[in-house]
Amino acid sequence: MTHVPHETPGLHARHQAVLPSWLGLYYDRPLELTHGEGRHVWDAEGNRYLDFFGGILTTMTAHALPEVTKAVAEQAGRIIHTSTLYLSRPMVELAERIAALSHIPDARVFFTTSGTEATDTALLLATCYRRSNQILAMRNSYHGRSFSAVGVTGSRSWSPTSLSPLQTLYVHGGVRARGPYAHLNDRDYIAACVADLEDMLDQTAGGVAALIAEPVQGVGGFTAPPDGLYAAFREVLARHGILWISDEVQTGWGRTGDHFWGWQAHADNGPPDLLTFAKGIGNGMSLGGVVARADVMNSLPANSISTFGGSPVTMAAGLANLTYLLEHDLQGNARRVGGLLIERLRAVAAGLDVVREVRGRGLMIGVELVRPGTGDRSPEAASLVLEAARERGLLVGKGGQGGATLRIAPPMTLTVAEAEEGAELLAQALEEAQGRLAGS
Image (cartoon, rainbow, N blue to C red; front, side, top):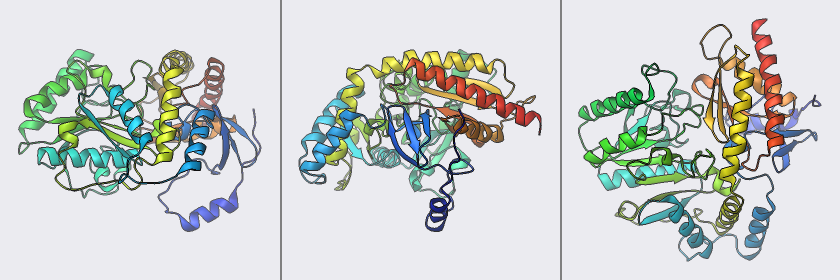
């Protein structure tokens, strides 16, 4: 399917005139999305696209999901804002449900407006509880855009400054198929990463506050360690009293199919001490938060509130969205339909030199691209595929080191027919990109 030209030059020029130069836009001709329904969105010229990126994994269930839209409208018609200085029934109800689902004992929940703010809060809690500014983080990680979140981000593409209020030490483990341990089997890989962690701790001044880790690295290109790595890490951390923060901003709510939370693939030594969430729970509304053990959450020695965290409207959206997800077993759908999609993409990749690896779980899939005939990551290939997919009516994301990995994360209501359609469109885009690279 060929789409009509998507020119919005006036809006693009206005964007450039008043917004930061570092606020990047996808596509050579940036796209203005005006509305959506289900797994599809439309642009300002009326072109329809199958959405395989969901607003960076944020439109978790569906665009314009009636249950969420209704809940938002009804709550807005009653009261839009109160702040945490007043009791809020929707906030208490959503906190109760998330606390129970978290599996963290004696859990407390604090709501924020984003994943970045959730990271800030988790770091504040951990450093206060442990009286230390030392943080362990994973190489190739991403935890947000703020000053403190950038300070624990292990990807230079998303680290604009080396200044930080934190002393961060980066350990191995988040990228299975590259790096010094890639040649090892899973058991030896975990052992080597644990040895690296123990060696790192031997070099610290002592009293490290926490390890923060994404069970599946999102911006890092949907890379993941073997199951059990963080359980092995936790055994070491527990000996030192170091907290474990699981960043579930992208892996939470069943997106990986196999588990409701990403940390559950590493559960042998229990749940994390803190868990951060955001993105999908609001289905597009600005909603994030932290779950923590009561002694950690209650460790702040000063007053704190949130003006917009726990807003009645976003709480209503979160409740309606979570209810829909659980009642319709979207985790099971992610496992079934995501498994089919990964299988189809691996079949496509088997005949293409431009694809190095198809990885992922459920509806969280990465396709790492290389220049044909080499093992070198190719951001050029990723850009070519992004453009070619868009021309065919498919939207995907990209990330990973150098931006050479396609990120595929459709809404979790994706149907088998839509998965098949998307796989075919992406196959065509990959073939076009490989042809263009071969001819360059």
